[in-house]
Length: 193
Image 1 (cartoon, rainbow, N blue to C red):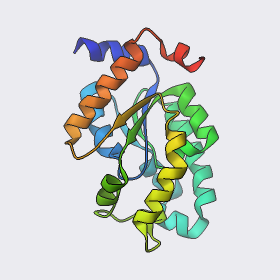
Image 2: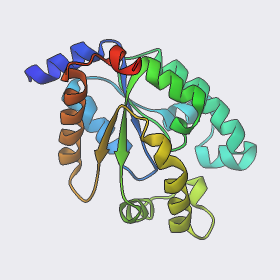
Image 3: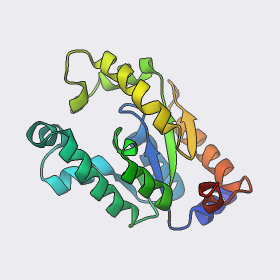
Image 4: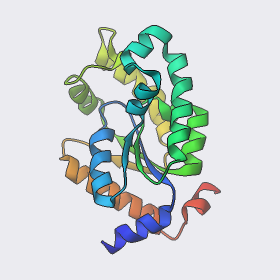
């Protein structure tokens, strides 16, 4: 438990922000991290839905993706100012320069990286994913991987996920975070390099 105390001390008022494509496990892992670190868990998509008064799928249909992304920037900035917490973001959030800057300033970013096969399997089990409503969800995921993975690589920490249990993935995230903050580089020093 000492390492978790050191981790919490190092992140101070910052949030741990989970980024990655839909199906990477951000919500499940986020809830487990919340329990392990005794920090509140917040799902940015749920907060956006509450602010908009409708679900994301309906928002996309009525207002479009551009308007959604603008609202997402505002909501995530507000949430980050409420840290520390575990914050799960939508798959496109880290792609927006303003959101990325807010996360770099007020959080520690963790990319949950998964293969196309894993993402396809996980996303096929659950609806409510507007970007996959085009008749070729696997093709869409493949395009998103090509476009987004180079940006996700800018995250402070990367954790590969696969078929393992959420508890194992959570343990890998905790180890990676501890290594990141305890490696002799403070978070602030790492950001200014």
